Image 1 (cartoon, rainbow, N blue to C red):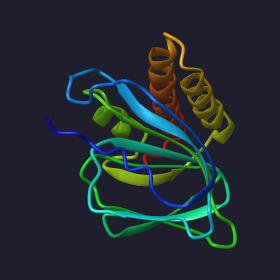
Image 2 (cartoon, rainbow, N blue to C red; image 1 turned 60 degrees about the vertical axis):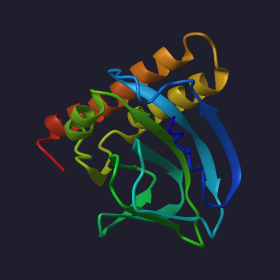
Image 3 (cartoon, rainbow, N blue to C red; image 1 turned 135 degrees about the horizontal axis):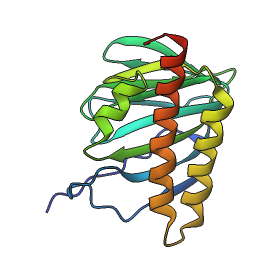
Length: 178
């Protein structure tokens, strides 16, 4: 039986994490594996050749460079970043203004389509047209994930789907696709 390491790495000065008892090998429409909030330390850095889950990043403060498949992006408040399984990526925080962020790692048969609908493709960072709406949904996921009630996972998945579709809807209304 193959075990997947969650790989929470990089130095942080403050964190809150939630984990769901989700079997990533079982086919589901959408399943959150884990997520949380991190206040990154100035030396926060993560470099991976691959990762087994879809990941979205919602920065709430500070800055971080995120390289996805050799393309450089800036994660900052008002942006949404993410990448799909198997995509190389490299995070490096701004030492003078380290990022604080909410992140969610997930899987499922709907994940790829949801990523495309919100313009994350296989990996991208996009500017949010309605950052307060996206942050509200990200904070709802964090809150429910940390509560760990019987319905937390289902609610978090609904909020995640709403977050990704909301971003896609905002892009469609603006006539933008990236």
